[in-house]
Amino acid sequence: EPEVTQTPSHQVTQMGQEVILRCVPISNHLYFYWYRQILGQKVEFLVSFYNNEISEKSEIFDDQFSVERPDGSNFTLKIRSTKLEDSAMYFCASSRDSSYNSPLHFGNGTRLTVT
Amino acid sequence: TQLLKQSPQFLSIQEGENLTVYCNSSSVFSSLQWYRQEPGEGPVLLVTVVTGGEVKKLKRLTFQFGDARKDSSLHITAAQPGDTGLYLCAAGGEYGNKLVFGAGTILRVKS
Image (cartoon, rainbow over all chains, first blue to last red; front, side, top):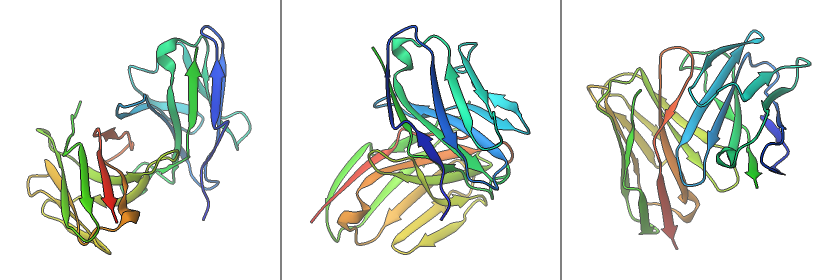
């Protein structure tokens, strides 16, 4: 069964550094998402992406965050200048379309640790 | 913003017992999804419910959507150790798939 893959599985970075988290969505899916889960807290929506542009973003997704689909295959999340509070599990997800009948398929996440 | 409250937060039971976990909100949902998440993995969708009063079954799991579409429950019959995990409910709109997640119920089934 096709799956969403994320790399790396664990990223350690120093505060102020830029990080890029990578995702390969399921190939025939058109909608892509990033969610994050701070340790012990809820899974939170960050951003959705369709047709090469952001379709919706949360208030968490500020100017420090950006997303890109550089080559038609990868979907990346960039954090320009990481803060300690960015430490979390970041989940990429994809879906065939945006309706409730099209479930989200999540990757196994990248654990980001900012020191 | 819809807020989803899940209860209980933690449940530890013996193999063979039945259990129910709840997901409640003061808001009306367009749809509600239940996910299961295991350590080190992403959430995996179990079911989507859309219609008020809807009941869906997945083997030993029974999902119910409240008539007013403000609450949902997950009932597991004869729990197995393999059912151990984090169960999350998530509310979505009709379009956009921007999900709002509950905090989850950690289930531990002891053999």
